[in-house]
Length: 117
Length: 109
Image (cartoon, rainbow over all chains, first blue to last red; front, side, top):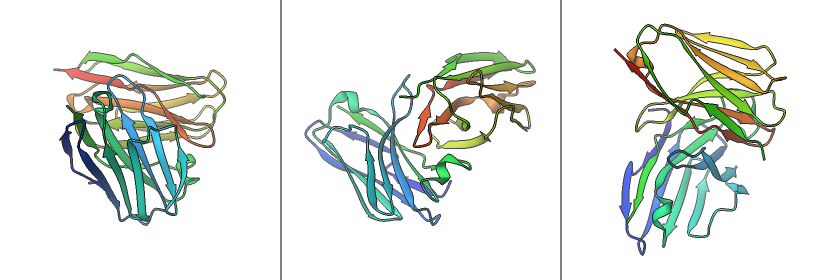
């Protein structure tokens, strides 16, 4: 375990379902991120939270809705997804948003493998 | 937008052989990161390269950075099966990371 825990590890959902992905870190980090990893594509940054405030939203469709109730927890709420949304969703954290640019970057979770049917 | 290209995308190599993975990026950056990802697992940080000419080594892996050529290399020496994984490079533009597509490495006995 890296210190960033994601649940569930695998999720299969229909296009009309509503589900949530959870990310938890107890590293004392202040910034948390959602990334999407699709086959044969670069990792795509989706959302950034800094001290619980959303600071970046990289043109992500509204069917993805993030929530950060505190600096240790991050959620990604999913509804009316499309099959092309099937991917590995990775959560990451860093001590400070600027730290990601200096030291060892992020600490990643193991990801949630999402399949939309 | 900063673009990051890795090659090869797939690499199959025999144990004991040497090989190099390349990471090119499109605009100026002085920070480059290498990550390793095992199937079904998290990305694990390998190296951070912070200046032109930086070279770092860990075991059979050695990473280098040429900021003038906008190129980083990850050299594998005398490959062993345990090195089989996907390797990502990532570059920062001062605001966020941009990742390459990854190189899937398979080391064959």
